[in-house]
Image (tube, rainbow, N blue to C red; front, side, top):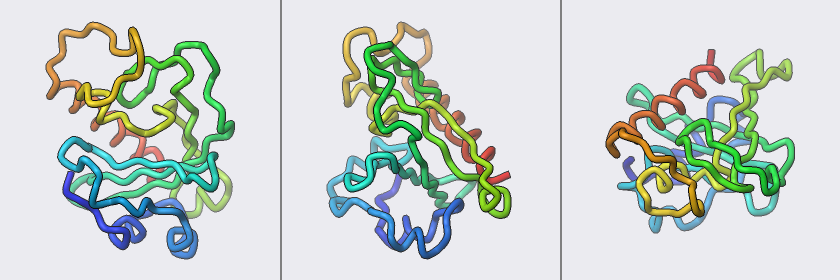
Length: 163
């Protein structure tokens, strides 16, 4: 993924108002992120632990989503699997809910997925971040195939939010 600027991120949100996008917390250390290893950029708001955000390129354009975690706590010590990157965590997966884009979202309709609580899926897939013992199941897929699976799962989630 190419490095993103704060302005690019703020203008890419599809499921919140321009005012909400202007007020949300974007990390200040964007230049220090491992952009070459990111298929999407995800972060949590340190001031509001129930809020998370992600930005990715989809069909040649940048798309960003505002997410909420109904329970800021993860599922405790029960192993759970991320539906994006298929990493198993003990206490590191959260239900993330995105308001649907447009009128459906204004009416309160949402889409949810179980995602790595820290939104570091691309780093887990590449082995750049460890999720603990037994977190990566033995697979015959190549690294490129695992990356593609994560990108495909994320794209399917974004389509559900924007349709």
